Image 1 (cartoon, rainbow, N blue to C red):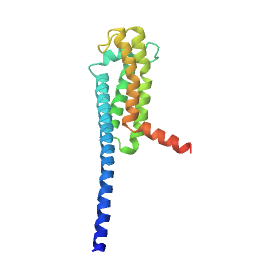
Image 2: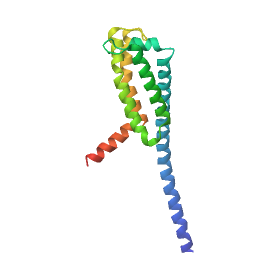
Image 3: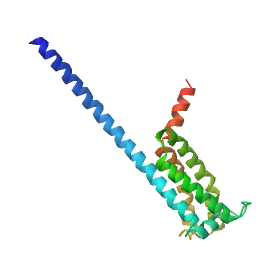
Image 4: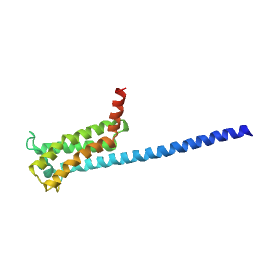
Length: 169
């Protein structure tokens, strides 16, 4: 009888162990789901913005191009719209192994267009419903949120930290 009970106890221990891992896995899965939803939402937002650059909001985006940029404002708007469409699609469709790179490029893009937001604030240019200095100033603080969102939702920040930890050992 003792021999029969022993496998039973072992089986119970395995079941209990699986339950413990299951809760951690569910928490991790819930976190991953939130990250994926964040990535998809950012991708959809970029697809919408890119479409706006090429269509109905083209004039408003031109008003945001700083005067010191040595390119035609319409070219800048169209080019950035095409980039936004590409990044939006990549955020949604890229295989997992490419997502950190896509996140890094997306974050770099948000940094690259930040001077346009600063210019809009400094020159007092009204566009996108931002018709007060206060509104334009608040908009400036949203740009770092976009950078962080791109890095977090794609795992780019986590991948960078993991690589940094490997090289510091």
